[in-house]
Length: 100
Image (tube, rainbow, N blue to C red; front, top):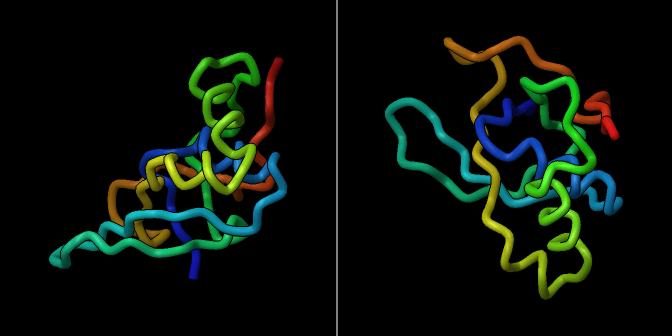
């Protein structure tokens, strides 16, 4: 299944750059309570085509991805099933570019 990143593109890219294969996410589905899931990075689609490598939020996320102990403290990203109404155009997470 593919997912739309509602909140957490920087954390997702940080996980990608740390060579992780999955990240914790809260799945938001209409009419259902939010559910915590482990989602593969290859299943994520981003509304952002690029993020800044120097953005303090990305830098903080990269530091957080450094070890299992610090990763456990990073909040899960928020996702929806890809294709829900109201989502922006997306690119696969693997195609999100890191700008200087």
